[in-house]
Length: 67
Image (cartoon, rainbow, N blue to C red; front, top):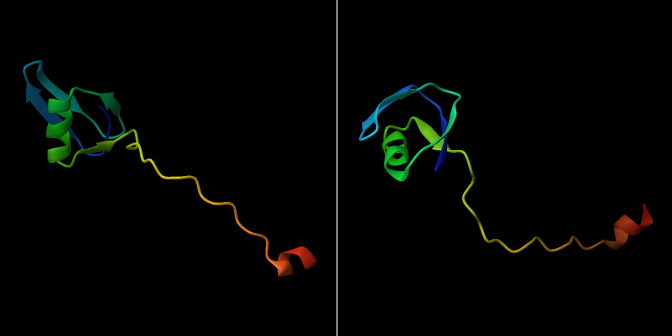
């Protein structure tokens, strides 16, 4: 998971201890990502996929045609 670090955070896990500073974009495993999110020290860098239908085109009003 890709995260944007927003606050300084130190994470300890099986891979050792890692420190991240604000402004970094890091790609970490799900466990580490959850630790960072739980500490409110980062936000997802990639937006979640949203399956919204495309917006309908705007209809032209008669007043628009006259201007």
